[in-house]
Image (cartoon, rainbow over all chains, first blue to last red):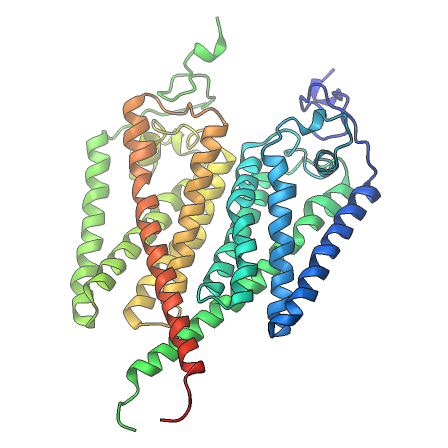
Length: 225
Length: 225
């Protein structure tokens, strides 16, 4: 019998992925998503409320919410994955291990410790996570580096997502347990990190160009007035 | 006998890398490097001479040389690699195939078509290559997007280099035929794409911050004068 058709006692595809001592998911999908949604909503609400006293425009307050949410997701969720190569063995029901056991149904390269995925998640967790929290501070205090920092993180997120999908396609795009997990986890869960960084990158690009046009017009302006 | 110790008729490590119909290098290392050095010097000289008539500062002329050099390297050299999965079979002595046969001695993931390497080179050749030539134009014509474009490409180059090295380390860092090729090709040939993009990214970051500080001071300046 073809060894690739013999399951190794885990729910992931390819079936012959070697995961010794795999321990099945203990939390349900709805449990995992509820905790994530509730925590995210809590963070966003807190940032929204506290930023109300900063005399900031709504768009800046929304951006602060995004950077706090994405920064903590990078640092906590993705940070745990990066530094926990054996999460799939966890028997304690620890939430972060359960997240990645569940997400691996949409992309088994997580459980399988694919070098490309670990690299992208590593850069995201270690560099982009803290940088996102710095962006909250930069917007709150109106720093001159606010736009270029947001642009840099957004571009990093887009580059990471590009590497994530292109490597999957080049390796056969066959890492999902079924079509539902493919669209819900592999595509759906990452979709925000394509759309939102694109919008922010374009906005920052425009703001930066506008600042240079102003600078240019100041320099060229005749001195007599 | 351990199959990993049986060479497959090619000069690359790991020895058991499967490269059917591999055709040995026809050009010598010094030939390959001379052509690259001569072509690069020609491009750089042409840009330096023509930019002399543009009333640009020396730093801008140096940057135009760099962007022309790196852009053409990305598009021609790396572009050929991305779209030529069977370059190692080339028997004609075609220069670009010879380049990658030779470079694979420093990193066999090129001949082996590693997904991470192909992804990074694909993004570099298809997006960063043309963007680099756009940067030459943007500097020459003093566009307001000049700094943010240069920053974006430099960050992309740095992200790509990070993915390149981190995936290699995670996969065992054993892709060089020997120590000489490891340091000359794998480290040496990529070194410029760490140092120069870092310098340019820092410079652009500072210029952009300065533009926003000026904008801020203009907005806050009392109107009476």
